[in-house]
Image (cartoon, rainbow, N blue to C red):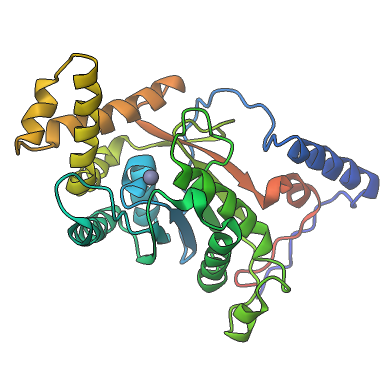
Length: 322
Ligand SMILES: [Zn+2]
């Protein structure tokens, strides 16, 4: 027998709803996506995937492992189907190889890392790297809308468009804006009707997860202690990009009159393990310490466009698959 839908006792009060929406709209107009929240002391509970999909949109091959590798592993372990779109081909992110070799190496290392992170599918858009600042935001948005309509995700995950402090990568900034707009334009039937002709119907994602170098108004902190070694193993796949990062650090240090033997050893052909372990373990520990927790990754999560309270107070639960 099918259980009756759960009705909330309280009848919807229209002025109450209006007040709630006005408060939210004012908040959003001020580009303030969430109310001020205290430091998290309880780690986020990862829900079972139950065959649901998460769509992750990144600019570069190393973004998944470095920004949220632990959480991706935990989602995959919990049964989520995680689809990852890589917008650029990282064609110039190397130090030594030429452009064609760089594209091939970074694509191969991305696939290797994706397997370690448990990503179910990767989508390569092949845009040029480090020039999204000049790309059309609307064209980029269309590419993301297409993937939202194709994958029909429960959650949409990308860079935090508000976390601009300390963010010097225009690929991240432009993509953050495009994904944030794709979230709502993917629901408009008149945006890209050519998708509909291809059988890709409008779709609304329920959750948005934002990550970044410094996430604003953190709402969720994921405990990654149990999967930190696996995150590190995924990050270590990016030998080509990390080799270039090491070179950048050496150039800066040299200008300041310094050398760092650890970096010199890597540049001379040594392995990246100690350096990457320092970055990945140290970074996760720092994030966790801010919240009184062990190694962690932090996010701002917005559910139901920030109107979640409406569902809790006035919504009815649909039957599974409804
Ligand atoms: Zn990146």
